[in-house]
Amino acid sequence: MTQAPLLRQITDYANRADPYPLYAELRRTPVLQEADGGPYVISRYWDIQSLLHDPRISSDASRLTARGGDALSQPEEETALPPSFLRLDPPEHDRLRRMTNRPFGPPHSPRLVAGMHDELAGIVSDLVAGFGDADRIDVVDQFAYPFPVTVICRLLGVPREDEARFHSWADTIAAGLDPAPEDDLAERNRVTHEARTQLGMYLAELVEERRRTPGDDMLSELVTSHGPDGPMTTIEVLSTAALLLIAGHETTVNLITNGMLTLLRHPEVLERLRSDPRLAVNIVEELLRYEPPVQLLPQRTCIADIEVRGVTIPKGSSIWLVLAAGNRDPQRFEDPDRFDPDRKDIQHLGFGSGIHTCFGAPLARLEAQLALTALARRLDRPRLVEDPPPYRQNAVLRGPRHLPITFDGLRP
Image (cartoon, rainbow, N blue to C red; front, side):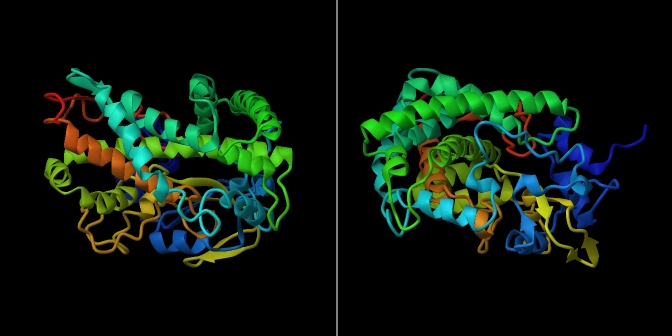
């Protein structure tokens, strides 16, 4: 039987549980284009790092031309809810990111995330207490999902009781990021369009409420703030709020779940974390290198000819940056396939780099540190029910769909 092209194998669900041997094979051809008109795939650390800072790489899907318009890289259909600043280029990207950052982080709100520590710890404690007398749980459904969802709802001012409504929309929109070639693209775009429209209508109702009665939440700040860049338009508030609502929990769920799975596969590290919670900082950074929640960045476009390792990537081409392959590049990291929280140099690509560095990285780090520490400290002899667990379909946002574990009760 003829072997499928490497990129097809990487996006094939059959390889979702362990794509790393495929990434190793991918790195043998650091600039790979398997078919004429297909995307150029970049897999080496330093090349990815450089391109993430290169202004000749566009994140704007509308700039993708026919040259890069292969079945794996189709831009999203235009929807009633326009792209967030994550999918825009400067100067619009910079303006909207500055405006969003005012109520979220420094310099205008420098203590927001740090000041949430006790509140986040309380949410974690309540979730663990909710396990009760059970000796088996699903880490995803009972912990890794409800934790960041509760946090982002409180931060934005979205009613937690509405979670069931936006959960379905968020899943559908996140699935739209997945470059699965077997999908009917027209149908996928239709379903994604509908989900984005429904989410936009839901958020529009909340925005109007905040205009009438502002609160102390981030959505109220986005609606009422008039900083140096002026106010956001209503449509800009909607697209930004949708981004924060979805990105604020999707990747953190994966980070926590991948983290617990990795710790259960490395019980000596789990025991160290139980004894020394300070190790959580290093563990989370190494997890972001070793099992990043965002595996690759598709749908980037070259807006000029770019040379990478002697290969000229023509203007208009689609380019994929495989962050997870770069994170295990032996030219960058010693013994890269080993999980080592004592690693001295963990300058990973887990949150990207450059102007599109993950906006919520400080919050995600704190959430993961608190979550993994609590699970390590409170669960007595936790064990995997199955390994590997069932994974999500998504190749971009890779993580277990469920993580069933057993344990001998809760420690005090």
